[in-house]
Length: 400
Image 1 (tube, one colour):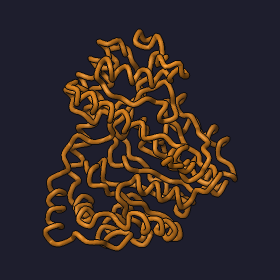
Image 2: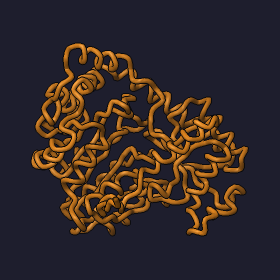
Image 3: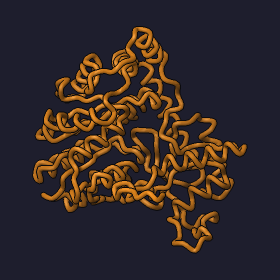
Image 4: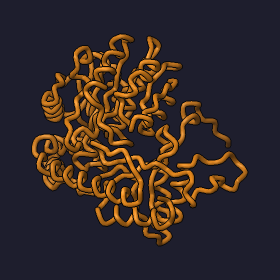
């Protein structure tokens, strides 16, 4: 039997970050010692108080369905957290989801139809493109690589991209994959364009709690943005709860009503006892988060210094736990980017990442996966020992 698949699936590719991680796992299964700098997952365990809260919730019988939007206690805690960030949302303007990725998917499905234009800021997290394509949308991309991945110098380019035909703009600050935190002037530029052209904006703030010496502004706090911003956040990164799958989004009530239809007919609700653990995360985990952020900052500084020792300059990230490493096309390891199959040459960053994994056993993600060829994303969510080992291997094998 031959199955035919829908266009909404055949027009997207699997996640590049997960694909690299799978290749790294395959090498490890063969006995290789792989330094995995590809995955966007904190290497810290989930704080013990959160684990305990989840166990206590199971023991208390919180193992059944919840209301689709999430338990009231968690939505109240989220509303309080958003209020502390300057965002005013009632509990009926919040949906709790199995991870922030599900939140983004539901928003895009609710807002984007066939042929609708969505504007992305490149480099952009890999799943934005896939989500838009699955909804039938068309992408317009704004390249930030010439401005050290900062938005403010590229506002004129953004103004050329955004028009009355734009349905949605996605802003991710702090950014995956660059770690850039956009300035208030940059966000005000976004606001001015969104108001002028009546555009809805997703503010993906999943890394908002992971910053170094800067205080990121929530886009929805700016004048004129409260009724046109959908704020997304979750628990995977700041609370090291990747496997718990817990996120949320907050926005205008009519959007919540519409997106809630998809939510109720797909995932039904986030896991009951995990939601109770989420309450504990928001209310009693500040110290653990601060300690993790301090460790990430030390690791960032270490990687920047190590790269500098090899004459490699990078845009120093102010948030998240990623940086973009420029790929040298003259590198000995990249004298050819042919894959030997007779097909089109691979992008140089893809060849670099594949070679680094095969030769140095260091896993990174090609920048072309994020819409910006010529770079490799490094995640410094690994121990200082492994980060040092990874950079030295890349240097020894001629990749730096």
